[in-house]
Structure formats: structure tokens, C-alpha cells
Length: 228
Image (cartoon, rainbow, N blue to C red; front, top):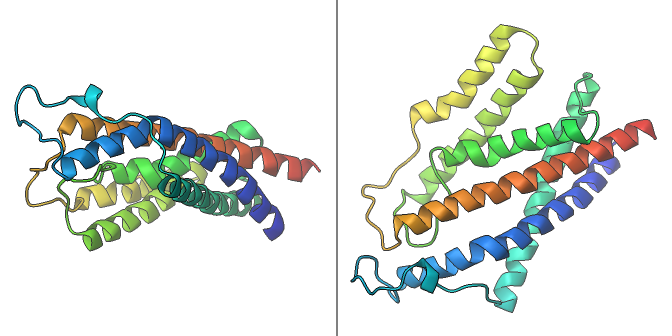
């Protein structure tokens, strides 16, 4: 079983990671490069009406070392996600609740996206360079707690039979947001909010596509292993 989980995680994670890499370079990289111009002072927000707008920002460009490292780490991250999701699927299958086919796997992938990206983004949205933010340590702690509580809550909502356990799962999902995410003392930064919001929306959309593909492939692999 361990070999099956590992093999499925590596194959599915690599494919999903490559999709995320392609979408990142096409849609997020230009926004990151544009934000860096504001962070370094090359462009100034509200400097004057003739200041270059988003259409004047950098488009697609290639920086071999930086892009190679980005691609490598994104693929490794999704392989790690695949291992965690695959292990969760295998554990659920032991109790008769594992995914049966690609469609059910896609729902598991969607749940992984909600737990790891969407729920934390409700308090700490994806950020471009140069935006105001709270201390790194407090953000990491809140993010980690949110992911853990969201994953546990979604598991109870989706797998528990009793309504009381499902309600407890919903409470776990809400708990970190009722506590509140760490926020900076002020929201003044050099990057235009329009650029930040577009980056956050695209980052979440890319994450959704990659997670659903990851779950679909893992569900298909689990179904084939069970039938074979």
C-alpha cells in the first residue's frame, strides 16, 4: 500500500505540479514582475496620471535559474500534497469511504484545495511582493492551524455519519476565522490594490485547477489499483 501511495503521489503530483507551473508562468509571473517594480521604486503608485499602468508592466519573460527553481519547487510541493491526499484516501478506504473513480477523486482534490488554500486565503490571501503584512511567525502559525482545523473539519463533514459530528466539523472550519488572522498595523504599501487582488484571484484559480487534477488522478489510480 505504501508503494502504491508513493507512486500515485509522485505521478499525480508531477502532472498537477506541471499544470500549476505552466499556469503560473502564463498568468502569475507577469504580475509578480510588475509588483517587484513597485517594490523597488521603479514604478510609483499614485505618482502621477502618466505613471505606467498594468498594461505597461512586464509580460512573459525567462530567467533560467529563477524559473527552474520555481518549477522544481512547485512540482515537489504538489508531490507532497499528493502524498498527503493519497494517504487520506487510503485511510478512508480502510473504513469503506475511499474515493471510487476519478469523479470522487476530484471532490477529494476540491476538499484539499479548500483546506490548504481557500480557507487560509479567507484571512491571509496570496500576496505580491511589497504589500503590508503582519509578522511572518504569527502568519505561519495561523496558516498552519487553519489548514489543520479545516482538514479535520472537512473530514468530519464529509465522512462522519452523525449530524452532531458534522456540526463539530463545521465549527472546526470556522474556528480560526472567528479567532481572526494576524493583520498588519497599517495597509499602506507601494503596490496598487488592483494588482494585488488580481494576483490573489489568479493564484486561487490556479490552485483550484491543480488540486482538482491531483485528486482526479489519485482517484483514478486508486480505482485502478482496487480493480487490478
